[in-house]
Length: 544
Image (cartoon, rainbow, N blue to C red; front, side):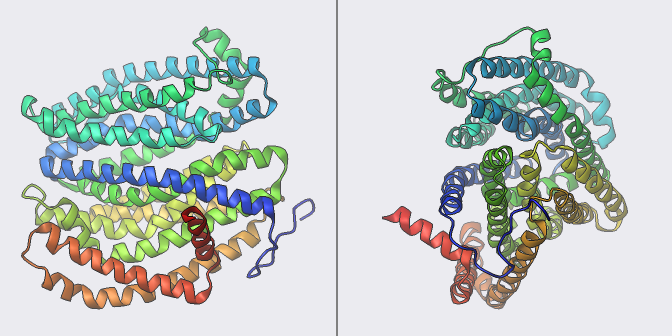
């Protein structure tokens, strides 16, 4: 591999590099701060799903709300998170490195104009055409689903503008405001359900209004932080012709081009999966959404936070040719994902029913709802590690301005997912769709790693060998730590039975979690785990 930096041999500890150590601490520092905010956001997101479960359960109205929110949210990935991560941040980073104020202003103004124009067209088209799309889902509450979709579609405009502001701030390594934005979205949605439901035809409409208002606040909370940097960051609307002719816009569009195909496949993936679920019986769509919310709680706290912090740095290292630091940062991120996600997967699988009963069970969310959600959750969780890894691997391509490889990987994953979902939905209903997603996520990871090998400067072989070794170690430790949990779980549930949901389910979950965590920490400490030592060192320094 000529031209590629020579890294440490598998299993060895690399020599200390002050730059790499400093950057590693920065990853943990920014990642932990953002993870804390994201933890609050995801817990509130979970509270939002608990609110939905309390008001709607797994009824046909709940399915209507889930589909209505999903449709504009799919476009959000294209106009918001997708385009910002794939194209905007790497391109804007170049302008920041060149420090050309005039060109930077022209670029930002062009992107704002372009984004506003096409998002507005999409919102208008979505409101007009949504009845045609919703017919494919076999919804019992068809008219209500159409109304809810039309009510929530403008959410796309607000959240796209919020993503534009987030891209600017993240490129400047400012992550806190964008961490607060989704907190507002969840709080407003929850409050709307409780405060507005008595004045509306049903709770679903109250929550839909909350989503709309929350999207507006996501953009509004970040704007003052962008304005604060007005000496460096300036922009306003320009003509559409000028926006389209801007070199930066053309570059962003070239990068987004392949991604549009991938996003279309991703959207079609979600649409087909939801349509299969909608035709599999009442409550299946909602049970999948409740299960995914639990999974996304973990993904959002760790994987998304690490990926968000990682992308601007990887883009800088790729543009400046500092591939040694690039390789080590990527390897560190992959190890952190394994350290967190694999133990959580084992514990969640052992405590799935207790967790679902604690969070969701009410008179509306009955025994059948628990069974439906548990079936989906059991098959969703094995895919957690791979989904999280994909959130870290994708920025490794975007940082190199390579959008074709993740797109092709996504298309392959889409084919696997839809084929398996169609085969498994009949015998396993929601569980079959969840299993298809987990397998497709593992395939996506394998394809991304294969494509990453095409850059000779990236040490995929060594990184993969190190990651596989660490993944296996985490798997063995997690399996050992979960054994006492499985043994004491029936006793714990019996001990606190009949004392209310919070006590009868919550205390066993907490005590079992402490037993699992203690066992895992002992094993990590006895093995001298390098990542564990690094995290301990970081928190010790923060405590001084």
